Image (cartoon, rainbow, N blue to C red; front, side):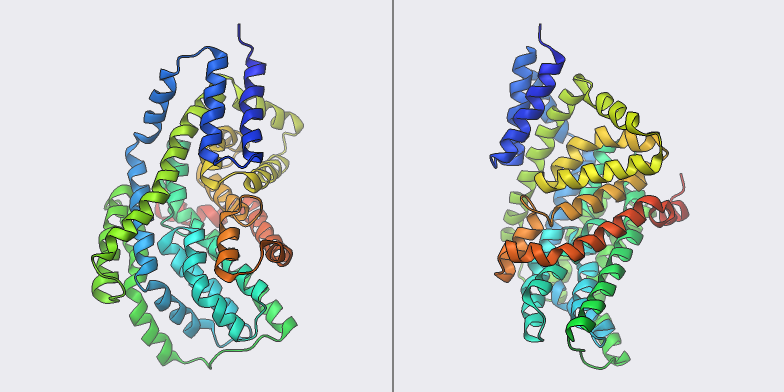
Length: 432
């Protein structure tokens, strides 16, 4: 008879062994699940059924639409408009171009919902601009990468849709609202850090402030910014579901990019759909294999074991949330963000709720936490994109990235222990 203890060991050890060997994360999840299933003597047909069940969820239809909308808006000239708007607002300050980077990421991330897309799109424009103005290329790249994490928090975010799906009865609208304040606070913290670095290294100021220029750039940027309003206001107001809002975002992004900004043609949409499909394929196979992995964890009672182990260390909510944050930060260095959301939410969320943390609040904590993981080797996707865009080696980037990571961790702790930051807007506009 198969031992549950041995099965747990097989599942966990085989999974992390393949991660260390640099297997694609979806393959590591799937293969370890198959090996464990064979050891337990369970029918392999169950794996296929669970994989289909994992992706046969209506709310997940929002994910491909949000991914496609982000691709279209990224290629459709919206990034140029948002950079001009950000420059008009704060480019006149000492180190203003670095702050422009942060604010542009706040705007663009709210449209793309992707940290890597933000870094790839804005980085190709802003990093060379900052280097020409006298900024160190490591700092220019790092501030581009760290500020891009705002896009994971500020809606629409397909990662939040995934979390809501895995967490169960969690409102996507409330999650969207919960991301605004943490995203803005992260942006303000990075702007303060940018100003400190600008004073320390005597980075230049931009052009003088002009209200006329602000109005002009605001008028040209409003079409892109309306994407956020259409999605969020529509979902929060109950006009349409998250899936419907994502589809509307695609239609609107095509209209703005083709008819207003005229940076792409209708024929270019097919190429952007191909890029979206490659990203979507990765996401869907992760979701399907994670469904099997998560089912095995539950079957082997691992969530209960982990919960009892953590709660056995302390019954203090402050200590428990600190442990959960440290655990997610560690996992973020070795696992993909989507995989952690899919695999770890069923394990960690019950622990958080047992000490009084609202599932919506925990969603904001998890998304920011795992966003930090995108900046850390060995599997930091945003770190790799930033290195590729700037041409700076990862080793050089990581050294200069440490102070900014410290700023992000401080913001994470503030959001963790000050619940109203995340919950004020959801409780105001969508009370339970």
